[in-house]
Amino acid sequence: MPVLYPHHAHNSSDKTSAPVLRPPLLLLHGTFIDAPTPHELRVRRNYFCGVDVAGGGRIVLLKEGKEREEYGEVAEELRRIAGRQGGEAEQEVDAPQFPQLHTKTTVPLLTWLTQHTFPLESRYSDPTYAHKTYPPLLRRLLRNATTTAVYFSSRHLESTKILATTAASYGQRALIGKVCSDQLVPEYYSESIDEAVGGTEEFIRWCYGKWGDGENALVKPVVTPRFVPTCSRELLGRLGEVVGKFPGVHVQTHAAESVDEVLLVAELHPKTPRGIALLNSTNLLTPSTILAHCTHLSRPEAHQLVALDVGIVSCPYSNMLFARSVVPITEYYHLNDVGNGGVSNGNQEAINMKKIAFGTDISGGPSSSLWVNMRLAILQDRIKSYRSMADYPRSVSPSRPILTSPPTSPPSSIPQFENDSGPDETSWTMTHTYAYHIATVGGAETVGMGELLGRWEVGRLFDGFLVDWVVEERDGAGGSGEAGFDGWIGEEKNGEEEVEWIRDGWERFVMGGDDR
Image 1 (cartoon, rainbow, N blue to C red):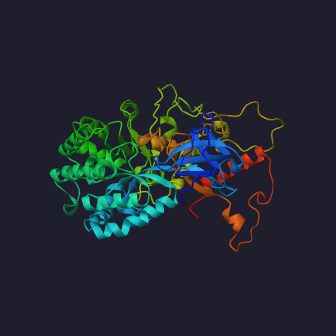
Image 2: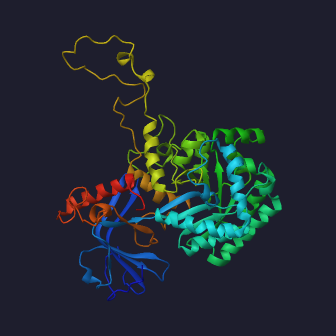
Image 3: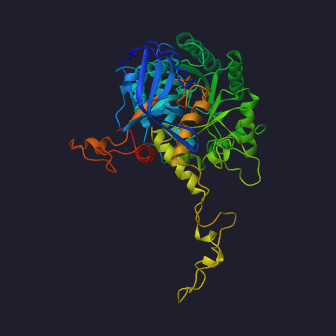
């Protein structure tokens, strides 16, 4: 989209807009949608959004108004049935595994690594393979509205640099780490401690030299021990020293991911049998740390991560396939501003974790779409209320005699399960709005950009995507231009009806839309 200039400067005392709009300014007009809290979908219909392109892409104006003439004919009019949504921050992309996406889903995690993934990642010793693989990956993620991504690269420095420059060339905000491993990987894919540490430091300095070390740097380096089983305690300690050399640098690793991984950590480190404790003892848990998966955390460990201000990443598709567990998002997420949506798990102290994000875990997760993972997060929240016949009260058990005649009056009370709110379970809190909030606001918090991304607000960075959720109904395969789901096309609605239609359309898109 070209940079557009306003017809004239606009001065207003309204605190929601900048006092003066100066070129170069990108000025948009349309519908803007975000989810400031898990239970609030904010729809701003007929709004102007002004973006200061020269000032780093910050929003300088967000104001309701139907008259484009107020700013001249330069406002880019979004299609009437489309809207701008806040961009998604994807937290767990194993970039070199992209070629095996949708495959290798039939074996446990550790077997999957040794038989399939390590051989694939070793191919990135050839930079040509990185040049071939990474552009399609970036195109795929951006089509899915992943405007910010956190990447695990391979162990190869040159290919990791190629991933960084590729992400930057596509304009995606990226946090990227050269993977480090010195044990329990094939000899052809292993590296010495000095190689791992030296390559990590070189990549950090190289990134800072190209994109700076500020909070708004387009590409940021990440210290990346693959996970505890493939890293000796000495390597973890040395990488912790690297974190000390570069204050604020991000850290990422996989943690408490699967049953076999948890048991292997205990076997390798009998004195420190839990991965979280080992990472903490080597100075790798900081406010800039992102831990992928965390499906097998103990409750004390979850509280510890909150105290250390560490972020975690739920990867629903991958976790369902490999982890034999899921992240209990609605039990962990902070309760301060979510109404009755947080779950305190009985009398236990609430976790109050504010840094929870979603990830696809390409290719452990067989979909590159964060939307698919959002839908699965909604489903996994329902699954905990599933019941078998063994759970039912005796009064409705199949072992009871079958009634030979219908009751003459309704029962005085409906039998309930133990510790349940009734047969119609109503404690489901993960909705499409909640999931979108985690994908945007939660993702922004987890990468340390909670004040810059995730919401449409003046002073934040412009970070969004355009959705047209009735394009097929409007245009049709043959361009018939027939009406959409409820006859919207060509039909006028009042303000309330229009906003409700937009809300329905947004839910329809979250639950069933894609990049088409």
